[in-house]
Image (cartoon, rainbow, N blue to C red; front, side, top):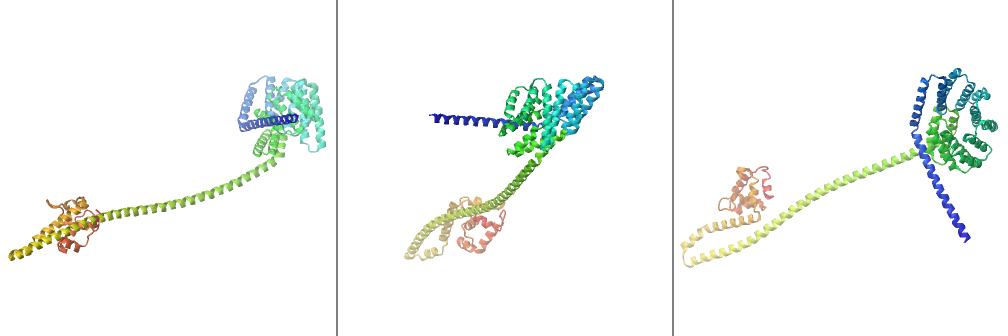
Amino acid sequence: MKAVYVIIWVVLCGMVTNVRAGEEKRFAGNLFETLDSLIARKSILHQQKEDTLRALKFQLLRASDAREKYALSNQLFNLYLHYQADSAVHYIHKKSECLQSLNDASLENEVLVNRAEVMGVMGMYNEALETLQRVNPLEMNLEQCSYYYRTYRACYGWVADYTINEREKQKYFRQADVYRDSAIAVMPEGPERHLLRVEVMLRKNQPEAALRALDSLQHENPNDKFRAYVNFTQSLAWEQAGNHREEEIRCLAQTAIVDLSMAVREYAALPKLARLVYEAGDLERAYRYLRCSMEDAVDCNARLRFMEVTEVYPIIDKAYREKEAQERRVSKILFWSICGLALSLVAFALYLYYGMKKLSLMRRHLFAANRELREMNTRLVQTGKIKEVYIARYLDRCVGYLEKLEQYRRSLEKLAMASKLEELFKAIRSEQFLKDERKSFYNEFDRSFLDLFPNFVDDFNGLLVEDGKIFPKSGEILNTELRIFALIRLGVTDSARIAHFLGYSLATVYNYRSKIRNRAKSDKENFEQLVMNL
């Protein structure tokens, strides 16, 4: 059972650790988002600071009292110190101009410390230390003495950071330690004194003690500047403790957020954060942070910060350029791949287009063939119907003719047996029988034809001019002209056959056909073909 409890405890601890790790990552992600937003809004924040500076400059122009001018010049100096060092020097001169009227030795020493501080920001460390040597701390109050010792400590710290030789570096650090101790001695008890003690702990390589002390300072934030110092010092403690990269990044990100929110240009957190972010693999963000740091260091004329940036900038810049080159290569490959795909699609589209065009042409040909086939089928049906009707009637007519011939033969036989030779010869010479049979034959033909084509007369007249139309007389079904073209509609186009069928001469039929063709509305040459299509 104990083993089970141990396993459960390990699992629960792992779950809690994972939850905390996830929360820390989300927290760091939120910090990066805030920092990215501040970098994007940097010009707006600087413009707001310029507005504040402009308002103070206006007050300074209107001020008449020397002490008020000194106080306003001091405000402008402090605002410009980490924003634009050259302008900070200008307002040190403005403060110096007020000293003759004020006749205050402590303020004269304060101006010297101001000058040394701005020289340190500009990288003029020897000049800064020489200026500090001219200060008489006995003529200063405790607050000014604290400022004096802290400036000395900062200058020696900058010199140590700038020094390559390790032995010399440690010598300057020891000098900085001496002045830090002096500052602690003259400072009243409070958060700033506590923070200097934390620096002493770090100098003694006691990061755990420093972190415990900094935890108590997290709730004592007199201003944004102090909060930035606390966060940056905490990042140094985590760095010294080792294997706490995420904590170090978090503290540096918080420091950089405060720096950018205050619209300062001389800072140490953001370039250091850029290096850690680069090592973590976020090259684009590291390049953006480093570029922002370099721009601000140049604008502020902060030599040390510029040197810090230039130490790591070539490495990140090279990696960023290589990444851009790789992205360009990938983009080119993708571009040409897309171009190739597009050309393939165009070729395929053209192939489909011509295929569809060919298919459309084939469909039109097929449609025309189907239409012709339907017309042919219709004609075949009509031809079949014509044949069926005319064959049936032809057979009926033939049987009728045989019966009539039999009757005619018997009538002649009776006349011959009765020796009525005169009547016999009269009957033989008479053509009435043939006329009646021919008339009956034509009537039968006309009825049969109109049964097949009931609208023939109207359709035929539709092909003729208005004054050339033909209509049967009263008692007629079809007249001679209509009967000729009825035969043509049935496919009998030979004039000799038409003449034989109607009992006319060939010339008569030819004249009828020519006369009617001349009455056609449009194409006289193809008139008979139009008749055949009715």
